[in-house]
Image (cartoon, rainbow, N blue to C red):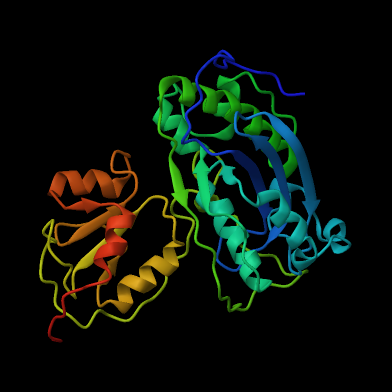
Length: 336
């Protein structure tokens, strides 16, 4: 039974704009790359006020090497008899349907789930997600870092099996409920992001069971033990054929050749968003410099290196939704 830590009084008016239900999710995976797979998943379903309705857990046979056994504890022998993702996809979907997906570093869990459904030629029934890291920032919680264990300790929640999907989901559900009620009490706007399911998938070659994957390298994790913003492998793209016309001017069109940098969580999977930019004739920059035309971020107040440099250089900053609108009508440029 969940304890109610630091919750608002039951008489607190509840914001009408808040979601009607949540699915607190944790997935453990074979690694952090595009082709890695889910090995276990757990969902705690919560009502509008964060009260637990039920919970569910399953292991998943990834049909390949399980990756960092020393983290999630699931060996090839244990996973051999587990169901394949297509076999649990319907049940998983029923747990997510009509709810906001809640996770700690939600872009990672959502990306892994969306990819698994795309492989199964289905769509995950998720339209919005909420990252508890972003929510803790909105609430101004006095946390030393953004580890799940730090958030749990703040609310007096005890972890029993770190990196076990069911226990991580339980811990997050216990920490999310008082966070949600604090947000309601203080009139905080929830940091909800749109989820757009993948509709196509092409598998690349992946290590099979018996061959060790290099997925969870020490460099792929933040100090909190969760995937950092650098976990996504960079993609080699052809050189942009257009010269850089300079900085974006607010209120005007984007122009082919402009250097665009991205920072932080995005509702559209980052690879897809970058593909759209390249198709429009823009140059996707992996870092930010004085030559960068525009920074796209949904969290302009974050302390990421790109946001900090954008402030220093005076680089224009817009959010993902505004960028999506601008992509509809990019001014053409002449090739070099």
